[in-house]
Image (tube, rainbow, N blue to C red; front, top):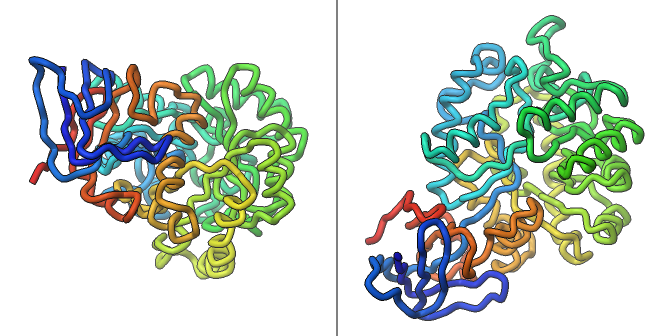
Length: 407
């Protein structure tokens, strides 16, 4: 038994703060929260901090970005082993920043058909390397020339970096079904689909729908029959509406949502992962001029979406779209969401209990008996100042301590 003592323990589902507080851990599980202490067990006094559940990022790409990556060149220079080695550092930084669970939301890199995020998740679960729990999507399903077609980010010439159906390039109902089945066969635990254009790729207007309604329905049918959810990169209101009506479970970004589409998402219970911090902090200084022009138009428009979705009752979960936000700096998204009108408690719920619901994980997201001992500590009170989440002092995942900086 291990007792973690802290000045405060935050229960995100109720907003209650215990002062002082303690959490008793046995193995990888929480035994009990409360001010008590386990008899005869070890005690860690964390001091003047607030204990809260481990945070969750519902939109990361651990196989992209990080030290040594060169935009435009790395996609054709870096082989899968190098990407995996870089991902080890990305995973470690993510965990140490307080994010104990992530969705790796779709590979859009050339891998020869290997699902690198599945392999990364296995290595972390085996204890070979440090990192968050990963819910892997395998390769993102995208049409030729779609936003998540890797050749579109640098406008490669024909024949440069050829991609296969197994790597997610799929056109027509038969191909998208086969692409989904391939990802599931090799370990994907959800499906990512490219539903519209994007800002930082040479795919035309960000809002344009990239798959037909029939292709959307086929993707959803394949995933849902196997018990997997579908997340969609989508910006345009019409594309979002088509995705929602096809049964897609989660919209990523949604930068161009209108009131009617927001209302439809609220009615259907479709999640939104707004990735709003990148609209302020993403480094686009090396992007092509036409992409910078798109960002200058779209990013300011996107910043009002969170408040509208919140008012309409759309369920939201936190996602950074790292490396659009550098790996390990996920707190920037929490801070931005508060700036957009959410309360700190609403943001923390979006990063814990809401995210747990999105990934159907009943074993995490709260501090309660029997749940996984995924816990972090921050100075001060995050309900008063959400920015303290950028100063994580303690990280525990599954009862194992991965960061301990008691002052």
